[in-house]
Image (cartoon, rainbow, N blue to C red; front, side, top):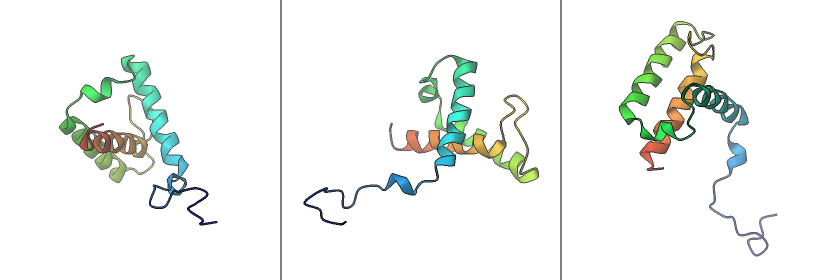
Length: 95
């Protein structure tokens, strides 16, 4: 139904279009980071360039071995790439 008099959501983001696996992947990396650093909000106090560098390092490792895992966390590089990109997106939007 597209009747905007019942539910006015025209033009709003359709979050259901995002594959939920990326949310799970980012959550896995975030949980590791929270266990490591003990702070859910510490990522917001890191310079943007450090996330860019980290994303690019994981991207290079991913390109060399698509199934490879980060030696410290044991989590796949592509999941770290997604998490770093999420941080970059949030910082770029001023969250």
